Every structure is written in structure tokens, then in C-alpha cells.
Length: 130
Image 1 (cartoon, rainbow, N blue to C red):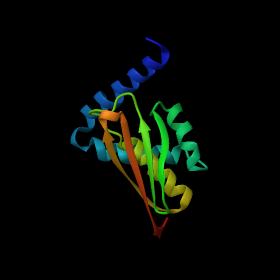
Image 2: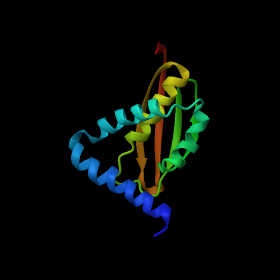
Image 3: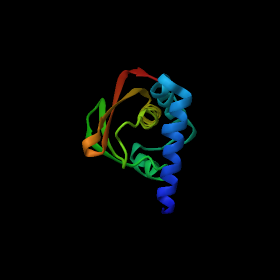
Image 4: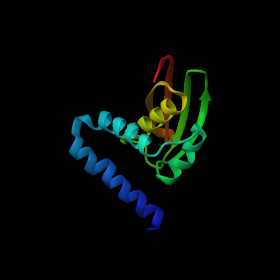
């Protein structure tokens, strides 16, 4: 097993098995808020920096699929998508966008297991300044 495979395996063990066991039915909600907390500890200056952060964190390959005024859709390509929770990544992106733009932002996740992709939609409310 290569170093990258070992790191990914270790990450998956903790993320999916240990945290899932500890957090139980609240896993998705808690990981979303943990992602927001992680973003506050590792702030980005621009959303363009997010793909590089995702690579360093072994979250997967992140790219922008579509960008509108109040909505941005990211595609996350990850080796394992089926049965996995991606709310940590969603919370991270939502908080980064909210901090950078200064408006309330929430994220929604749609797993496309057959394509090994996750669509993370960020929706911002320009009327809600933070």
C-alpha cells in the first residue's frame, strides 16, 4: 500500500467508522458544523483556493460546475462515494463562501455514486449580511 493509500485508508477509518459510531444518527449534522468550524480555523482568501485545500486534506478533486449570482455548484470527485457522508466538505465550503462574501451561505449535498461524484450546491442570501 502506498503512502497516499495508507493516509486515505486511515482517514476513512476515522471518518466513516469511528465518527459514525460515536455520532450515530447525528453524524451528518455534526460533520456539517465541524466543517464550518474547520473553515474558520483554516480560512481561505478566495474560493479559488478551495480545490488545493481539498487536495491537501485528501477530500478529493474539487471543481466548479456552475456559478450564478446566488448559487455555486461544486463537483467533488472522490474514490469512494457510496455510503459516505460529505457534509464536512459541504460545511467547509459554505463557511468559506460566507466569510469571503459576507452573506449567509448554506450548502446542500447530492451524491452521484455511479459517477463517483458529489455535487455540493452553495446557496447564498445577499439580503442576509453576516
